[in-house]
Amino acid sequence: MTDLNAQARDILIRNDRGGYTVPTHGLYPYQWNWDSAFVALGFAEFDRDRAWQEIETLISGQWDDGMIPHIIFHKDDPGYFPGPSVWATGKTPATSGITQPPVLATIVRKLWEDEGADPTHSRMRRLYDACLKSHRWFHVFRDPKANGLVMVTHNWETGRDNSSEWDDALARVDTSNVGDYQRRDTGHVDAAMRPTQNEYDRYVAILQFGRNCGWNHREIADNGPFRMIDVGMSMELLRANRDLLAMAKAMGDAAVIVELEARIALSEKGMDWLWNEEAGAYCSRDATTDQSSGLVTNASFLAFYAGVGNSTQRARLIAALERITGSATYLVPSLEAGSRAYDHKRYWRGPIWLVVSYMVAQGLVEAGHNAWADRICSDSARLIEKSGFYESFSPEDGSGSGGPDFSWTAAMWLAWCSKGDMA
Ligand code: GLC
Image (cartoon, rainbow, N blue to C red; front, side, top):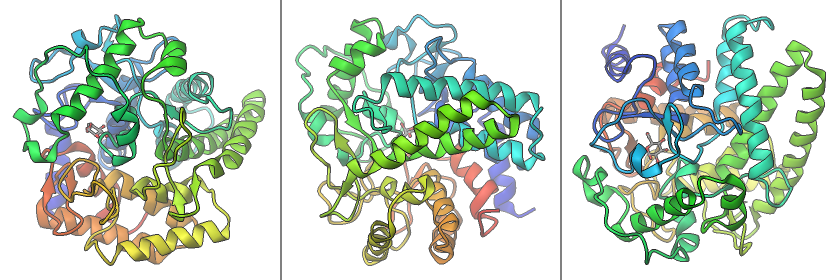
Protein backbone atom coordinates (compact mmCIF):
# COMPACT_ATOMS: atom_id res chain seq x y z
CA MET A 1 0.00 0.00 0.00
CA THR A 2 1.43 3.39 -0.89
CA ASP A 3 1.88 5.97 1.76
CA LEU A 4 -0.90 8.11 0.30
CA ASN A 5 -3.33 5.17 0.37
CA ALA A 6 -2.55 4.67 4.03
CA GLN A 7 -2.96 8.38 4.72
CA ALA A 8 -6.30 8.50 2.91
CA ARG A 9 -7.66 5.56 4.91
CA ASP A 10 -6.36 7.10 8.07
CA ILE A 11 -8.20 10.37 7.35
CA LEU A 12 -11.50 8.53 6.89
CA ILE A 13 -10.95 6.54 10.06
CA ARG A 14 -10.00 9.63 12.06
CA ASN A 15 -12.96 11.64 10.75
CA ASP A 16 -15.33 8.79 11.66
CA ARG A 17 -17.53 9.85 14.56
CA GLY A 18 -19.32 6.48 14.86
CA GLY A 19 -21.45 5.59 11.84
CA TYR A 20 -20.87 8.87 10.08
CA THR A 21 -17.89 10.92 8.98
CA VAL A 22 -17.27 14.64 9.43
CA PRO A 23 -15.92 16.40 6.31
CA THR A 24 -12.95 17.65 8.36
CA HIS A 25 -12.30 18.24 12.04
CA GLY A 26 -12.92 21.80 13.28
CA LEU A 27 -14.41 23.57 10.27
CA TYR A 28 -17.22 21.06 9.59
CA PRO A 29 -18.02 19.01 12.72
CA TYR A 30 -21.28 17.33 11.56
CA GLN A 31 -22.54 14.97 8.87
CA TRP A 32 -22.97 16.62 5.47
CA ASN A 33 -25.26 15.12 2.86
CA TRP A 34 -23.28 14.87 -0.38
CA ASP A 35 -19.98 14.55 1.48
CA SER A 36 -21.26 11.30 2.99
CA ALA A 37 -22.27 9.98 -0.40
CA PHE A 38 -18.74 10.42 -1.77
CA VAL A 39 -17.15 9.28 1.47
CA ALA A 40 -19.02 5.98 1.11
CA LEU A 41 -17.07 5.37 -2.11
CA GLY A 42 -13.84 5.77 -0.15
CA PHE A 43 -14.87 3.39 2.63
CA ALA A 44 -16.03 0.91 0.00
CA GLU A 45 -12.38 0.43 -0.95
CA PHE A 46 -11.56 -1.18 2.41
CA ASP A 47 -14.74 -1.60 4.48
CA ARG A 48 -17.97 -2.33 2.58
CA ASP A 49 -20.14 -2.45 5.67
CA ARG A 50 -18.94 0.97 6.78
CA ALA A 51 -19.65 2.36 3.29
CA TRP A 52 -23.32 1.38 3.45
CA GLN A 53 -23.56 2.55 7.01
CA GLU A 54 -22.41 6.08 6.09
CA ILE A 55 -25.46 6.49 3.85
CA GLU A 56 -27.83 4.71 6.22
CA THR A 57 -26.87 7.13 8.98
CA LEU A 58 -27.43 10.03 6.59
CA ILE A 59 -30.96 8.96 5.72
CA SER A 60 -31.81 8.61 9.40
CA GLY A 61 -32.24 12.39 9.10
CA GLN A 62 -34.63 12.28 6.12
CA TRP A 63 -37.78 14.35 6.67
CA ASP A 64 -41.29 12.92 6.37
CA ASP A 65 -41.84 15.06 3.28
CA GLY A 66 -38.85 13.33 1.62
CA MET A 67 -36.13 15.96 1.94
CA ILE A 68 -32.68 14.69 2.88
CA PRO A 69 -31.17 17.61 4.82
CA HIS A 70 -27.82 19.13 4.00
CA ILE A 71 -26.50 18.69 7.56
CA ILE A 72 -27.39 16.19 10.28
CA PHE A 73 -26.37 17.48 13.70
CA HIS A 74 -25.90 14.18 15.52
CA LYS A 75 -24.14 15.96 18.40
CA ASP A 76 -23.98 19.69 19.05
CA ASP A 77 -20.65 21.43 18.53
CA PRO A 78 -20.11 25.03 19.64
CA GLY A 79 -17.37 25.50 17.03
CA TYR A 80 -19.85 25.76 14.14
CA PHE A 81 -22.25 28.45 12.99
CA PRO A 82 -25.13 28.12 12.10
CA GLY A 83 -25.71 25.14 14.41
CA PRO A 84 -28.92 23.28 15.27
CA SER A 85 -30.40 25.97 17.49
CA VAL A 86 -30.12 28.51 14.68
CA TRP A 87 -31.87 26.27 12.14
CA ALA A 88 -34.50 25.29 14.73
CA THR A 89 -36.15 22.69 12.51
CA GLY A 90 -37.43 20.69 15.49
CA LYS A 91 -36.34 17.36 13.98
CA THR A 92 -34.80 14.32 15.65
CA PRO A 93 -31.96 13.90 14.86
CA ALA A 94 -31.49 17.67 14.57
CA THR A 95 -30.97 18.79 10.98
CA SER A 96 -30.71 21.89 8.82
CA GLY A 97 -33.81 22.90 6.83
CA ILE A 98 -32.36 22.72 3.32
CA THR A 99 -30.99 19.96 1.10
CA GLN A 100 -27.83 19.32 -0.97
CA PRO A 101 -26.96 17.81 -4.38
CA PRO A 102 -28.86 14.55 -5.06
CA VAL A 103 -25.91 12.28 -5.84
CA LEU A 104 -26.99 9.50 -3.50
CA ALA A 105 -28.85 7.23 -5.95
CA THR A 106 -25.84 7.24 -8.29
CA ILE A 107 -23.54 6.16 -5.49
CA VAL A 108 -25.96 3.55 -4.11
CA ARG A 109 -26.17 2.05 -7.60
CA LYS A 110 -22.38 1.85 -7.79
CA LEU A 111 -22.03 0.18 -4.37
CA TRP A 112 -24.76 -2.28 -5.30
CA GLU A 113 -23.35 -3.10 -8.76
CA ASP A 114 -19.87 -3.59 -7.34
CA GLU A 115 -21.40 -6.26 -5.09
CA GLY A 116 -23.04 -8.11 -7.99
CA ALA A 117 -26.27 -6.13 -8.56
CA ASP A 118 -28.51 -8.54 -6.69
CA PRO A 119 -32.09 -7.15 -6.92
CA THR A 120 -32.91 -8.57 -3.48
CA HIS A 121 -29.99 -6.74 -1.81
CA SER A 122 -31.76 -5.45 1.31
CA ARG A 123 -29.48 -2.50 2.04
CA MET A 124 -29.81 -1.27 -1.54
CA ARG A 125 -33.62 -1.59 -1.40
CA ARG A 126 -33.92 0.54 1.69
CA LEU A 127 -31.73 3.26 0.22
CA TYR A 128 -33.56 3.03 -3.09
CA ASP A 129 -36.79 3.87 -1.26
CA ALA A 130 -35.14 6.83 0.48
CA CYS A 131 -33.72 8.16 -2.80
CA LEU A 132 -37.07 7.79 -4.57
CA LYS A 133 -38.78 9.72 -1.80
CA SER A 134 -36.18 12.46 -2.02
CA HIS A 135 -36.42 12.67 -5.82
CA ARG A 136 -40.19 13.04 -5.50
CA TRP A 137 -39.61 15.86 -3.02
CA PHE A 138 -37.54 17.68 -5.65
CA HIS A 139 -40.31 17.12 -8.16
CA VAL A 140 -43.03 18.47 -5.87
CA PHE A 141 -41.21 21.39 -4.30
CA ARG A 142 -38.34 22.31 -6.57
CA ASP A 143 -39.57 22.30 -10.14
CA PRO A 144 -41.35 25.67 -10.45
CA LYS A 145 -41.20 25.69 -14.23
CA ALA A 146 -42.33 22.07 -14.59
CA ASN A 147 -39.35 21.41 -16.86
CA GLY A 148 -37.53 18.83 -14.74
CA LEU A 149 -34.77 21.20 -13.58
CA VAL A 150 -33.86 21.85 -9.94
CA MET A 151 -34.52 25.10 -8.12
CA VAL A 152 -32.50 25.84 -4.98
CA THR A 153 -33.77 28.12 -2.25
CA HIS A 154 -30.42 28.65 -0.56
CA ASN A 155 -27.00 28.82 -2.19
CA TRP A 156 -25.75 26.30 0.38
CA GLU A 157 -28.01 23.71 -1.22
CA THR A 158 -25.93 23.70 -4.39
CA GLY A 159 -22.83 22.44 -2.55
CA ARG A 160 -21.01 25.07 -4.61
CA ASP A 161 -21.85 27.54 -1.90
CA ASN A 162 -19.99 30.66 -2.87
CA SER A 163 -20.08 30.47 -6.66
CA SER A 164 -20.38 33.79 -8.44
CA GLU A 165 -23.50 32.40 -10.17
CA TRP A 166 -25.47 33.37 -7.08
CA ASP A 167 -24.17 36.93 -6.74
CA ASP A 168 -26.97 38.81 -8.51
CA ALA A 169 -29.76 36.90 -6.76
CA LEU A 170 -28.01 37.30 -3.40
CA ALA A 171 -27.63 41.04 -3.97
CA ARG A 172 -31.43 41.33 -3.87
CA VAL A 173 -31.71 39.62 -0.46
CA ASP A 174 -32.70 42.05 2.30
CA THR A 175 -30.29 41.83 5.23
CA SER A 176 -31.73 44.65 7.36
CA ASN A 177 -33.13 42.29 10.01
CA VAL A 178 -30.28 39.80 10.25
CA GLY A 179 -29.16 40.94 13.71
CA ASP A 180 -25.91 39.96 15.40
CA TYR A 181 -24.26 36.57 15.07
CA GLN A 182 -20.79 35.14 15.44
CA ARG A 183 -19.23 33.42 12.42
CA ARG A 184 -17.06 30.41 13.22
CA ASP A 185 -15.66 29.48 9.81
CA THR A 186 -13.07 32.27 9.75
CA GLY A 187 -11.71 31.02 13.09
CA HIS A 188 -10.72 27.76 11.33
CA VAL A 189 -9.40 28.90 7.95
CA ASP A 190 -7.98 32.05 6.34
CA ALA A 191 -10.75 34.62 5.83
CA ALA A 192 -9.39 35.38 2.37
CA MET A 193 -10.57 31.93 1.28
CA ARG A 194 -14.03 32.25 2.83
CA PRO A 195 -17.11 34.31 1.85
CA THR A 196 -17.13 37.99 2.81
CA GLN A 197 -19.22 39.31 5.72
CA ASN A 198 -21.67 40.95 3.35
CA GLU A 199 -22.23 37.59 1.60
CA TYR A 200 -22.59 35.78 4.90
CA ASP A 201 -25.32 38.19 6.04
CA ARG A 202 -27.32 37.23 2.97
CA TYR A 203 -26.90 33.51 3.65
CA VAL A 204 -28.17 34.06 7.18
CA ALA A 205 -31.12 36.18 5.99
CA ILE A 206 -32.26 33.37 3.66
CA LEU A 207 -31.96 30.85 6.51
CA GLN A 208 -34.08 33.15 8.72
CA PHE A 209 -36.83 33.28 6.08
CA GLY A 210 -37.11 29.48 6.27
CA ARG A 211 -37.07 29.41 10.03
CA ASN A 212 -39.65 32.19 10.28
CA CYS A 213 -42.13 30.22 8.16
CA GLY A 214 -41.55 27.04 10.18
CA TRP A 215 -39.62 25.42 7.30
CA ASN A 216 -42.74 25.28 5.15
CA HIS A 217 -41.18 24.09 1.90
CA ARG A 218 -44.10 25.27 -0.24
CA GLU A 219 -43.82 28.80 1.12
CA ILE A 220 -40.02 28.83 0.77
CA ALA A 221 -40.21 27.61 -2.84
CA ASP A 222 -42.94 30.05 -3.88
CA ASN A 223 -42.00 33.17 -1.94
CA GLY A 224 -38.47 32.70 -0.60
CA PRO A 225 -35.81 35.37 -1.14
CA PHE A 226 -33.52 33.17 -3.25
CA ARG A 227 -34.76 31.08 -6.18
CA MET A 228 -32.11 29.84 -8.60
CA ILE A 229 -32.17 26.99 -11.06
CA ASP A 230 -28.81 25.34 -10.40
CA VAL A 231 -27.09 23.76 -13.36
CA GLY A 232 -25.19 21.38 -11.06
CA MET A 233 -28.15 19.94 -9.22
CA SER A 234 -30.26 19.79 -12.38
CA MET A 235 -27.58 17.63 -14.02
CA GLU A 236 -27.05 15.56 -10.88
CA LEU A 237 -30.75 14.83 -10.39
CA LEU A 238 -31.16 13.79 -14.02
CA ARG A 239 -28.21 11.45 -13.64
CA ALA A 240 -29.52 10.16 -10.31
CA ASN A 241 -32.92 9.46 -11.87
CA ARG A 242 -31.23 7.37 -14.56
CA ASP A 243 -29.42 5.40 -11.87
CA LEU A 244 -32.58 4.97 -9.83
CA LEU A 245 -34.30 3.74 -12.98
CA ALA A 246 -31.61 1.08 -13.45
CA MET A 247 -32.35 -0.19 -9.93
CA ALA A 248 -36.13 0.00 -10.48
CA LYS A 249 -35.73 -2.11 -13.62
CA ALA A 250 -33.63 -4.70 -11.84
CA MET A 251 -36.34 -5.01 -9.20
CA GLY A 252 -39.21 -4.88 -11.71
CA ASP A 253 -40.79 -1.89 -9.96
CA ALA A 254 -43.20 -1.21 -12.86
CA ALA A 255 -44.99 1.93 -11.68
CA VAL A 256 -41.73 3.58 -10.67
CA ILE A 257 -40.18 2.74 -14.04
CA VAL A 258 -42.98 4.65 -15.79
CA GLU A 259 -42.67 7.54 -13.35
CA LEU A 260 -38.91 7.85 -13.73
CA GLU A 261 -38.92 7.51 -17.51
CA ALA A 262 -41.34 10.41 -17.75
CA ARG A 263 -39.26 12.52 -15.40
CA ILE A 264 -36.04 11.78 -17.27
CA ALA A 265 -37.64 12.75 -20.60
CA LEU A 266 -38.88 16.00 -19.06
CA SER A 267 -35.43 16.91 -17.70
CA GLU A 268 -33.66 16.02 -20.94
CA LYS A 269 -35.91 18.41 -22.80
CA GLY A 270 -35.88 21.02 -20.04
CA MET A 271 -32.10 21.30 -19.87
CA ASP A 272 -31.96 23.57 -22.91
CA TRP A 273 -33.50 26.29 -20.77
CA LEU A 274 -30.08 26.51 -19.12
CA TRP A 275 -28.08 26.59 -22.35
CA ASN A 276 -26.39 29.97 -22.84
CA GLU A 277 -25.45 30.36 -26.48
CA GLU A 278 -23.01 33.17 -25.88
CA ALA A 279 -21.13 31.30 -23.16
CA GLY A 280 -21.38 28.07 -25.14
CA ALA A 281 -22.33 26.21 -21.97
CA TYR A 282 -25.12 25.30 -19.59
CA CYS A 283 -25.30 28.01 -16.93
CA SER A 284 -27.38 28.47 -13.77
CA ARG A 285 -30.37 30.76 -14.22
CA ASP A 286 -32.56 32.81 -11.91
CA ALA A 287 -36.07 31.34 -11.54
CA THR A 288 -37.57 34.73 -10.68
CA THR A 289 -35.94 37.00 -13.29
CA ASP A 290 -35.02 34.30 -15.86
CA GLN A 291 -31.56 35.87 -16.06
CA SER A 292 -28.73 33.47 -16.97
CA SER A 293 -25.49 33.77 -14.99
CA GLY A 294 -23.53 33.32 -18.23
CA LEU A 295 -20.73 31.79 -16.15
CA VAL A 296 -18.86 28.64 -17.13
CA THR A 297 -18.24 26.64 -13.96
CA ASN A 298 -17.12 23.09 -13.27
CA ALA A 299 -20.84 22.22 -13.01
CA SER A 300 -21.36 23.21 -16.66
CA PHE A 301 -19.30 20.15 -17.65
CA LEU A 302 -21.67 17.81 -15.81
CA ALA A 303 -23.69 17.76 -19.05
CA PHE A 304 -21.81 14.59 -20.04
CA TYR A 305 -22.54 12.97 -16.68
CA ALA A 306 -26.22 13.82 -17.12
CA GLY A 307 -26.17 12.59 -20.73
CA VAL A 308 -27.50 15.78 -22.31
CA GLY A 309 -26.52 18.08 -25.16
CA ASN A 310 -26.61 17.69 -28.93
CA SER A 311 -23.35 17.28 -30.84
CA THR A 312 -22.90 21.05 -31.30
CA GLN A 313 -23.45 21.77 -27.63
CA ARG A 314 -21.06 19.02 -26.62
CA ALA A 315 -18.41 20.29 -29.02
CA ARG A 316 -18.70 23.75 -27.51
CA LEU A 317 -18.27 22.33 -24.01
CA ILE A 318 -15.13 20.50 -25.08
CA ALA A 319 -13.89 23.74 -26.66
CA ALA A 320 -14.47 25.46 -23.31
CA LEU A 321 -12.39 22.79 -21.52
CA GLU A 322 -9.65 23.29 -24.09
CA ARG A 323 -9.78 27.05 -23.56
CA ILE A 324 -9.56 26.66 -19.77
CA THR A 325 -6.29 24.74 -20.08
CA GLY A 326 -4.81 28.06 -21.28
CA SER A 327 -5.23 29.63 -17.84
CA ALA A 328 -5.38 26.64 -15.49
CA THR A 329 -2.43 24.36 -14.82
CA TYR A 330 -4.82 21.86 -13.24
CA LEU A 331 -8.40 20.94 -14.22
CA VAL A 332 -11.28 21.50 -13.42
CA PRO A 333 -11.51 24.98 -11.86
CA SER A 334 -14.82 25.91 -10.23
CA LEU A 335 -14.84 29.13 -12.25
CA GLU A 336 -13.03 30.02 -15.42
CA ALA A 337 -10.11 32.47 -15.01
CA GLY A 338 -11.05 35.91 -16.29
CA SER A 339 -14.71 35.55 -15.28
CA ARG A 340 -16.09 38.15 -12.93
CA ALA A 341 -15.12 37.38 -9.34
CA TYR A 342 -12.56 34.71 -10.31
CA ASP A 343 -10.12 34.10 -7.45
CA HIS A 344 -7.99 30.95 -7.43
CA LYS A 345 -8.08 30.81 -3.63
CA ARG A 346 -11.64 31.76 -2.72
CA TYR A 347 -14.45 29.25 -2.17
CA TRP A 348 -16.05 28.10 -5.41
CA ARG A 349 -14.71 31.08 -7.35
CA GLY A 350 -11.78 29.24 -8.87
CA PRO A 351 -10.50 26.40 -6.64
CA ILE A 352 -10.87 22.78 -7.71
CA TRP A 353 -13.09 20.37 -5.77
CA LEU A 354 -12.22 16.78 -6.58
CA VAL A 355 -15.76 15.46 -6.17
CA VAL A 356 -16.99 17.66 -9.01
CA SER A 357 -13.94 16.72 -11.08
CA TYR A 358 -14.77 13.05 -10.47
CA MET A 359 -18.32 13.43 -11.80
CA VAL A 360 -17.11 15.46 -14.78
CA ALA A 361 -14.51 12.79 -15.59
CA GLN A 362 -17.07 10.02 -15.24
CA GLY A 363 -19.35 11.75 -17.75
CA LEU A 364 -16.47 12.35 -20.16
CA VAL A 365 -15.54 8.65 -20.14
CA GLU A 366 -19.13 7.69 -20.83
CA ALA A 367 -19.21 10.13 -23.73
CA GLY A 368 -16.00 8.65 -25.18
CA HIS A 369 -13.75 11.59 -24.28
CA ASN A 370 -11.24 9.37 -22.52
CA ALA A 371 -8.24 11.61 -23.00
CA TRP A 372 -9.99 14.46 -21.18
CA ALA A 373 -11.12 12.15 -18.39
CA ASP A 374 -7.54 10.87 -18.00
CA ARG A 375 -6.20 14.40 -17.88
CA ILE A 376 -8.65 15.33 -15.09
CA CYS A 377 -7.84 12.14 -13.20
CA SER A 378 -4.08 12.65 -13.36
CA ASP A 379 -4.36 16.35 -12.48
CA SER A 380 -6.41 15.36 -9.43
CA ALA A 381 -3.81 12.83 -8.31
CA ARG A 382 -1.04 15.38 -8.81
CA LEU A 383 -2.86 17.89 -6.61
CA ILE A 384 -2.97 15.42 -3.72
CA GLU A 385 0.62 14.34 -4.29
CA LYS A 386 1.75 17.97 -4.25
CA SER A 387 -0.37 19.41 -1.45
CA GLY A 388 -2.08 16.66 0.54
CA PHE A 389 -5.74 15.96 1.20
CA TYR A 390 -7.09 19.51 1.20
CA GLU A 391 -10.69 20.55 0.79
CA SER A 392 -9.87 22.31 -2.49
CA PHE A 393 -6.90 23.31 -4.61
CA SER A 394 -5.71 26.26 -6.66
CA PRO A 395 -6.02 25.53 -10.40
CA GLU A 396 -2.98 27.76 -10.93
CA ASP A 397 -0.32 26.52 -8.51
CA GLY A 398 -1.97 23.43 -7.01
CA SER A 399 -1.73 24.71 -3.44
CA GLY A 400 -4.35 23.46 -0.99
CA SER A 401 -7.16 25.72 0.24
CA GLY A 402 -9.93 25.40 2.83
CA GLY A 403 -9.68 22.69 5.47
CA PRO A 404 -6.97 19.96 5.67
CA ASP A 405 -7.44 16.15 6.08
CA PHE A 406 -10.64 16.29 4.11
CA SER A 407 -12.79 13.17 4.00
CA TRP A 408 -14.13 13.40 0.47
CA THR A 409 -10.70 14.28 -0.94
CA ALA A 410 -9.34 11.13 0.74
CA ALA A 411 -12.29 9.16 -0.66
CA MET A 412 -11.64 10.43 -4.19
CA TRP A 413 -8.04 9.34 -3.90
CA LEU A 414 -8.97 5.82 -2.85
CA ALA A 415 -11.91 5.32 -5.19
CA TRP A 416 -10.69 7.19 -8.23
CA CYS A 417 -7.60 9.24 -8.93
CA SER A 418 -4.99 6.92 -7.38
CA LYS A 419 -6.20 4.26 -9.81
CA GLY A 420 -5.63 6.30 -12.94
CA ASP A 421 -9.06 5.59 -14.44
CA MET A 422 -12.77 5.42 -13.62
CA ALA A 423 -12.65 1.71 -12.55
C1 GLC B 1 -18.73 23.56 2.08
C2 GLC B 1 -18.94 23.14 0.63
C3 GLC B 1 -20.02 22.06 0.54
C4 GLC B 1 -19.65 20.91 1.46
C5 GLC B 1 -19.35 21.37 2.88
C6 GLC B 1 -18.76 20.29 3.74
O1 GLC B 1 -19.88 24.15 2.60
O2 GLC B 1 -19.27 24.23 -0.16
O3 GLC B 1 -20.15 21.59 -0.75
O4 GLC B 1 -20.68 19.96 1.48
O5 GLC B 1 -18.41 22.43 2.85
O6 GLC B 1 -17.62 19.75 3.13
